[in-house]
Image (cartoon, rainbow, N blue to C red; front, side, top):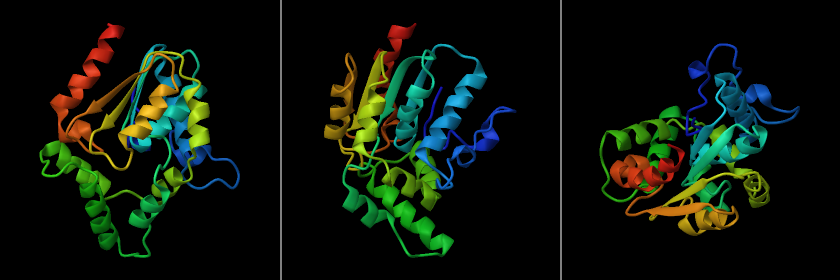
Length: 224
């Protein structure tokens, strides 16, 4: 069960599952929010009928997955949070590089693409890298605003709900969710594991799949 980037696309949800994050907002809440997306993810897991899921989230998906945990007590047996601190660590840099007054869709796409490329390790290539660039170039502005509103206090409270095996992964060269921030989260969860994917930036599963799997597979073996 995953709450990775884009996994909450309404078209991919089973019939009867209202997965649109903006349908779960409180009065006055923005069109998209982490809380709304977490509610949708929790409902999706409930609809599948599974009782022992391992929840995985990368980047913003990690922020969503973390906020999903307290909503589904008893339905998870494992948790993986990859390249996600759950909140913006360096707020000034985050907004400076992402906020724009440009309105032309193609100009926005180019700006997003340039940003995604800076988040990766130098010289990486491959079909998964191309996929990340294509999807990242289409990142909507309301998603950026949602993660920008997250706080460390929120994250600390959500981490307290993790009472099962967990793995926190960091990209060695990731400046968006730096390894030291990921390590702080891991240290807040009793018995958790922490690993760094060497030579990778913010998208280790795309930049070096074999290296990434080498970090995840040992954790997953305990559930076999």
